[in-house]
Length: 467
Image (cartoon, rainbow, N blue to C red; front, top):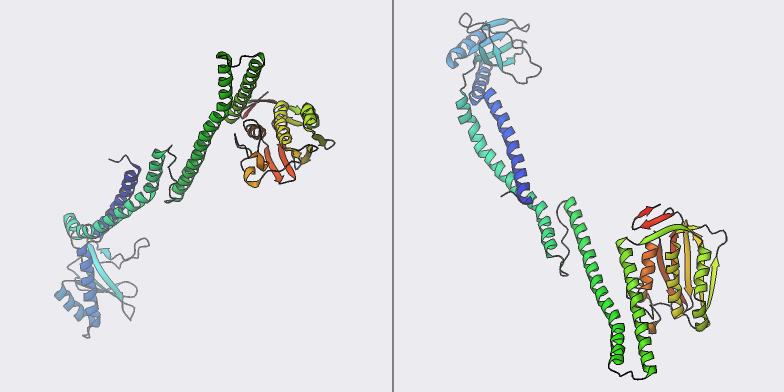
């Protein structure tokens, strides 16, 4: 019955309320035992008699006191200013009453005991002549049952019941205020991984609001991840379909004899070889991305000479640059510090960037590789003098399989569109970042920032470094 959070919260509030009301009831009951209704009524009667005695014009005071004692069945005493008894209407009949002493811890105590320890209730007032007038009567005997029935039950049944019902209603409201937003989070969580799952309204206490915001953020990221996965599968399928179609077609041509000449068979074999090589490279790139995503890619950290690495990359592209009629230039600041990184992985990054720049640089164009230190980071820039990348393409340039329309001069013209995505992941694994700057008609620059104080030399697997 009380398995849900809402019912448990309500039960907790209810127990607290009942406990608080129970404490109040006990305190009230103790008070009523010590000061029952009969005692309060007796004190009020004594004050009335005292007022009547003081307002009487009869003289002497002793006559008024005796008459009041007889008429109201009370004991009237008069104390001198030095607290000695001057008058006692019950002298000789009852034990002497002392002048009441003030008690520091008890306020408005109207009880005094005579020489025989009999308790008397009294009302006392000082007269103009500094004497003290006391009106007293024996304290009435109180039965516990009478106090419970006459004094305690009426108060508890009326005010206590109203307070309990009102408190339980408020407790129910607060329980719903806390639990309802959580119920909506649970309902939305059960709807996952549906793409139609919507963010939950942020309501309730601060902690519940923070939980709801975190849940909404998780849902947004999950839906974005699902969308990315669907696009990824669709793109892989599309990229594999073309080479597979070519391989299947030319293989069929060889099998059914359509390629009946040596040149035709040679052409078919060449296409099959080229397309299978393309598929092989794409599979390797996908495996690379998968390992980088999972944090299982082995990255061997060592001291890397960046100028030497950039010169090696530029030299590797010499045949392609000569065929395309494009020049390449490497510039590096003198006294550049060595960088702790994986040299092979960084070479893969800059190879992808140079390869991408070569695709969009026209004949007689220039590709520049520059290295410098900027604010505790190594900045390596790869620039070209191509047509530039449109702003809408720049936002997706590092997305997997993204290929901007070649007619607009952005994206990768050839390949599966994984080169820049791999470069982005490798730079991120080094604790760095990569960005792009471009102006249409003027060229594009990719900026790679790598931390100088990077992970110590060793083997980096995911997030751990092993010496």
